[in-house]
Image (cartoon, rainbow, N blue to C red; front, side, top):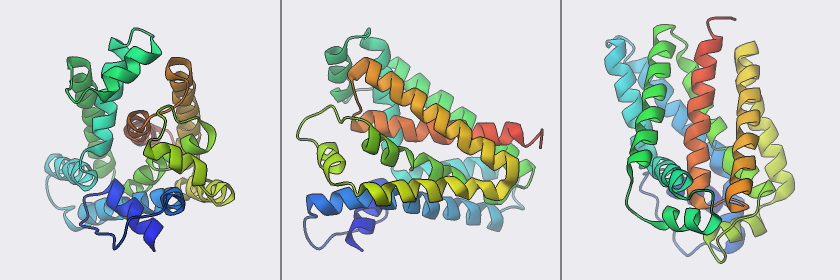
Length: 246
């Protein structure tokens, strides 16, 4: 259970306390449970939507987005803001980009990226509730948390001696591939909308990976967090758009 608890402690605000310091192997194994944590988050969002579905949609959409952010402690949004600031302020230079990512302050581009992602998420949630496709809320946190698994499997971690280095070294590769494949099948429940959402996820993730490699020759914790937020938003938004055509 320790790897699961590590994932739950790191990715959520649940009050999890480990009895001892986890080993590097356990940290690597915890990546396998990231989609499971995503599933737990998605189920919580679904039950909120189901229990309070008689509320005005505009209010319920706001509640769901608030809970979504609160459950993660804004961790990935912080990575998104840092990455956006670094990408614009780094002027294409690797070292400058990495230095800006380490700066705890948030610049105007970072703030703008947060507003854009949250606005698009809220709009898509609103339409999802309007069309009463409540169970779809389960799949997007899962898809978002496949991203770290794939990125750590396929991409160098830039910062030496960081947590990501241990994750990359000790991740169980065969189980990771199996976990990714299973998680990608979850959206198939929604037929063509789900299939296209998975395809959009895969294409978007590898586009982001390409840009990370071009700019900083790999990934950091911030870029992984940014990937989670961007991919959640893109898959949610594309699913809603596709729902008008299928």
